[in-house]
Amino acid sequence: MNDKYEPKPDDRSDNVEKLQDMVQDTIQNIEEAHETMEYSSGEQKEKIKAKNKRREEAIEGMRQEIKDEAKK
Image 1 (cartoon, rainbow, N blue to C red):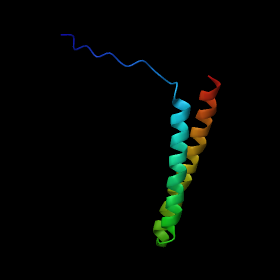
Image 2 (image 1 turned 45 degrees about the vertical axis):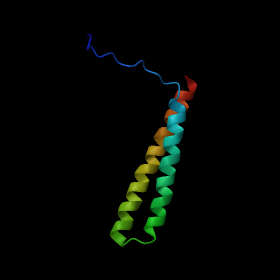
Image 3 (image 1 turned 135 degrees about the horizontal axis):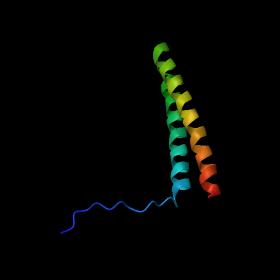
């Protein structure tokens, strides 16, 4: 029996689709966080705002990666 590990081939054919799904999920998280902010205290609101800012930055990075992947 051969127990040697063989990695799967690197298949990037669906990267753009996966990235687009991630962008949509992140946008949904931002929207849900905005709804949560309505019922949050001052400190909690600031934490949510900071997290949403990081999410928006992540979205920009994902969109750039989508552009890069689409060029390949």
